Image (cartoon, rainbow, N blue to C red; front, top):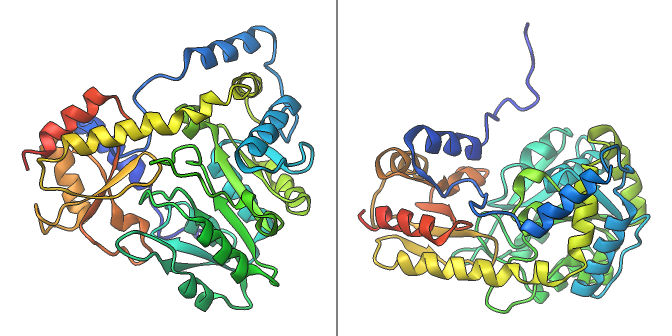
Length: 380
């Protein structure tokens, strides 16, 4: 059969590729962003409890009410505003389904969506699938901050959405209150929507507060915010996320969501609702990951890699230009095969695939794992 691909330039993701190589060569996997330490036994016990209680059939399409209420309470606790449980919150199959459902529902053929470059690699294909165009705006170097004048310069009458990601994957950069104000100013008086990917909202370092668009009344009126329980509670395989949006946008998003996954694992929703009742369960996440970040930087001090400051997420960028002049894809593959450590090359996150000799390391690992990886890397 002759099939016309909707994504002719897309293959398997770099995460699939590098994890497969790590398995093949027995390398330490600091590539794909998953923890190698266990989920809270308390949370697992709650899932088991609700499975035993019979919560094993379809949940309501937007999510079980008790979880949506817990999300609303958490949002108010964190950002000073409580979304409407019935009209503003939908539980999704991870944040990627939330993003896919939102873009599918709200973006049409011929529209333009501004993304920050480098960007998480799913954004552009999701936009392309709608017959729309992703317009990349380069983040400033070396801190990966947003150039708001460059964003303003790319806005046209076709611009329907601006996508931001904070804390930012892959760089670990975060936005500030000034950034929120700039985004307010740029979108004021327009019909431009904002999609804010905030899956690492509870992994912000050095005592800084996460600057969610939900803090801004003006931005809340035009924004879709995606979050991830998988990231927050180190249970990436559970595929549990949610989105918050104005009722008018949520109505359209749910039309897609109901024909996408329809609903999400019932017992886990009830379990997370219970778990959210104790704020320390999410407030303790940032200090835990900061300790891991600082440990990884410490054990890498004697290496020839040069770290790029990470303000959030569980990723650390490292420049390897003092070690090799190979392109980053070739160097990451060589490291996996010959050094025994798998990473992600940064060029894959850029629209133009620019190579700055930078790799992304995931430090969501036990200290033993990080120390073993550093021992290998420090020999280069």
